[in-house]
Length: 568
Image (cartoon, rainbow, N blue to C red):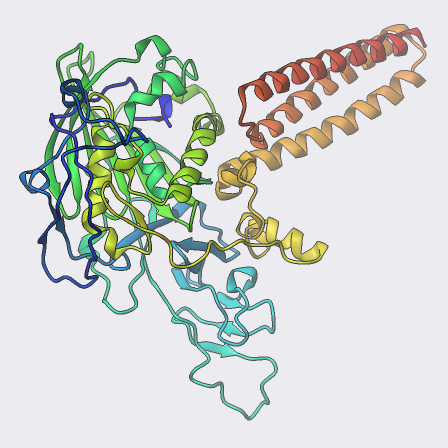
């Protein structure tokens, strides 16, 4: 992930540590409810094994290039374990502007399925996505007078989760008190809807993240949301890795270039049970102008200050708000903003930047999905698989070591030295039966999102467009224009056949041809919004050649059509 919609505008990274991390020979059993941070001692062999080179010992050269221990405890073979409960956190659910006004929205946090909607007063409400009657998903229901109605038997629930209507209940009978749904606290802050997942601990509103730059006068941002087919930890790794940008995103815009790949500098300035922070930049520049902060549970930001030509200090932020959505799945809110805007951002439409962001994720999708598969298959901590370089992978090592400290309080985790595999199998959703149900589930305004049932994350439409009101509106607008232009082309063609004067016939043929050109332009725009990711480069080249062939055929057909009409 990178580029014009990415904080890592140019590549950089390097570490402070000079020693490799040794491989533990014993397994540590963690107590989930530790009340304070404690040190756990393990024994280590003298030989270090990484990335399947188990018979090799660490050389002096390795000491110079690989990320080593980040603390004295780690050098002594001790590991800090912090008290942590993943439910006692605020998770980013959705961009406020994209929450449907007239339909419930089915979402997940780890393996917990929830439903978000707006009640009759426009207030955000969040329930467990399960009707207490017969366990049907409430997100497949509809809103009736501000109440959430189950699509199965029509039970209706008000904002506090209380059932207020059961159509099948006798007129003189009272609704059982147990006919209620579990509720979750939701809060809107700085344009994002957050949910508190704990059912035992009252919401800690002090934990809601606050991003200083977004509150500055004149600060404007471009925000997008994306559903992605790999684990949230792999996603965060990718987002905090500036070294991959010039390689993976070469020439995607005007900033990333393969020849700019180079060693980077890092300086870790903060470490805590909540995350870490530090500065980074290019080694050749000898400076670290970028400030990165990772904060639990899965929020990442990259900030930079710079002075404009007018002498005024400006602020830039790349913000990544990640939400785990199950094994091998995640959802990401991306927000790039600054107190100054580029001229291009004032000219180009918003949907262009959204599709550019989608293209960047598609460039990473193949190898990140493969990485996810390897981690699940190998079932070992990352230090036995990764070769983390001091000059590119410091943030990645810091993140996995933070997972070592708090991962015991998560449903599953892949840490630097520890691992806990998922206890529950991955949930595979299926599309609802029947044509009507399928259409209903595929439209956000008709009771649900199709991707929640039959996700096709190879398709840009399902990854982004259905979650974005502006892009959905653009697709509808292009479809409307396309249909109108097709009708106009047919009408003009019929008139050209009936016209007696050559001048009128020429005018009508040219007009029909222009309409067909408009149809092609609209179809191309719609195709961009429905772009299907192709993993292999060879397939991409084949797709490009096929697209050029189709364009050539279309041009020839339009030319032949015009000539035939002129000859009539």
